[in-house]
Image (cartoon, rainbow, N blue to C red; front, side):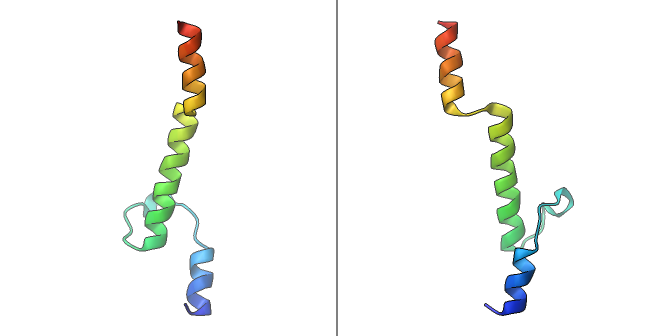
Length: 56
């Protein structure tokens, strides 16, 4: 990979306006952002199990 291309990829950050871009880095950032958002909003499986145990 060319040094300039590596630097371009390394400088990328997630931007909601770029979610529909077709390049691999943008797709990867969008997927990672979705996974992190889901974890923050839903919690972890451990948290869900503890909550279910409390409800029993």
